Image (cartoon, rainbow, N blue to C red):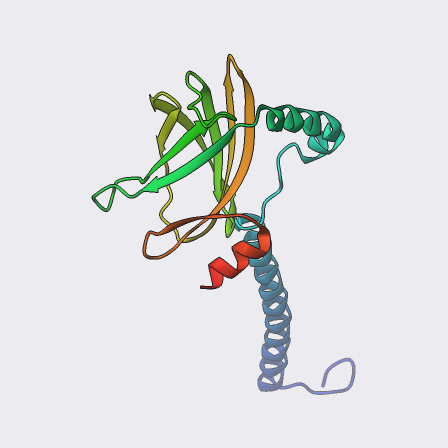
Length: 194
């Protein structure tokens, strides 16, 4: 007989120990599953390229008036751009994007330095910096990593002796390889659905 007055057999003692370990294991397993689910959620939230934080957003907001002035100067030049897209033969070849830069009298604007940023709206975190090379007067071309169909956005900046030009364009690339410029946001939604 024990000091407490109750006799505990070895079988009861081992059953009680097993029950303690089982319940502690269940509790720690549930905590482990919770930590694992939280880790997966954090990974998915931070690694998705369709969610993006715009770099320099606050500075852009502060310099809104300067940006509007720069855009007004660009618009006053009367220049416009015509974008053409050409898929080159071969599966591994990057397609060719060509920009024809024309002045107000529809004459080519030559000898400009042209750069751009290109991204697919479904993957706004994947921004491609593009440097265009003048192939003939007023025509600038670059090979671009456009393979995925859908809505794309291109921001152009061209600087030359005659002035500085900037423009944003949206276009839709269809599965067939057809390329269409988008005039407005509602137009882009309807073209993507077709």
